[in-house]
Image (cartoon, rainbow, N blue to C red; front, side):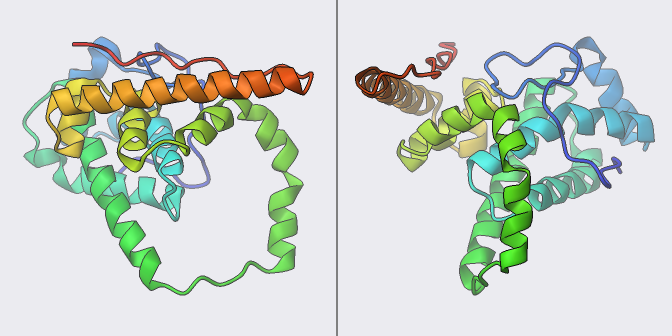
Length: 227
């Protein structure tokens, strides 16, 4: 089981980032099949490597999809991965990541259903003060991410889901189709319309910033791959 206690997945891990992801996460590259086989044999170092590789993009996905408790969702996903990995025969990294994000999507749906059945308790004033205390540093550290996530929130649910899997998780069209149970052409259509809407929103925000005498820090996100 990967060690997760006392740590939150961070961006900017050393290594090659997966193309298309706004969360810069390390990729195991050619070491992936060997690492996956070692994890199946229960090697702790291999599990830790898989966790470091996947956790940042999983957490980014959970946050962008407004999971009730993103960190808890990531932990539940890895617990299921640990239990189910021996039954996964494929050593292909893209297939593995699609499988993991399929689990994450199911867990997200379950978490939303559970949250909708629970009464929401207002936060105590001291809790709100504690959250506000680190707000400025957190906002500075995640400025560009927050801007992108704010834009994604202005899309339709289907467009946002596809673009979060593309831009945050770094999945490609075939993996997104597998995760969301859609035809690849439907995924491409949602991505195309979502990106067109994003560009429209960015242009509108830029014009508003110019009218206000300020400059916009937003830049268009990368397009989806067109395989």
